[in-house]
Image (tube, rainbow, N blue to C red; front, side, top):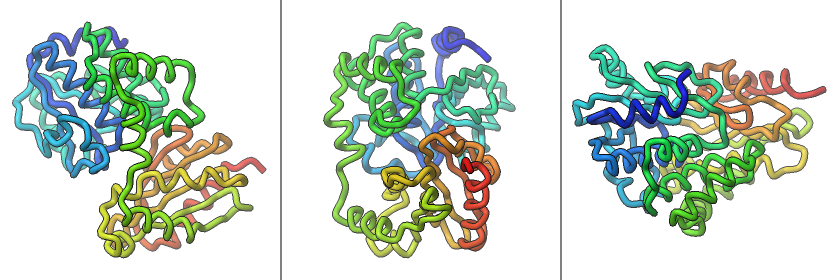
Length: 322
């Protein structure tokens, strides 16, 4: 694995770059990408950020977020991947990335997931509460002093992936990194409101309905929420409206693992998993081809919901302390 200083040197030498973010983007992948995009701009390097789908509305309050493209338009020298554990995380953009690899693009991977496969020529992977902590250090090593906008991109990622600095992997480094970007002008009050507290009336109704139907199992140590396409259609919402639902389960005292099963389409469910620490949910997700972090991971299930639930329940049960 490369050092972050080596990655900084590689990026400074690029003449142009495409920055890849993962499908179903969250604040950390978007914050990492847009912070790097801003830093490269300040160094005179052309770049663009790409994502396969729609950017969740709650992140559009920051300048530049609407400029993220669905596919590369630059014939760039470098392809930079942020907050993405493997190429499959790019979704429909995976083919564009692999095509660039075949053409000899300089590929760079900057991530914080323990499940990262080191799929680029240059790789830096360090587990932290958010990838934006890695990115903040990288920007500094590139010789860029963050302005207010760059700082707010970084803080958005730190706030999002740390659960507003409440997750078990938050440490002094996390808080020092956040303090630095706040000192650079990032408004933590605005960012936490936009990312966590602001919601539409329709989303509040969906949240209430889903939470009222939580399913407890394994002596109340496992709780599962189900969000169906029918419910999303009922309230006129998109899939990004389900973000944050999984975190509620961990507020219940006996619960050790919380899961949100979102119906992507008929016969396909995206599972988001959270743990208080007694269960490594990266291992659980790995059983089903997914991954992420020890405390927060995800995977996909195909087929009947009850069969998927039984498989997930068994995988969690195998890892719960007796």
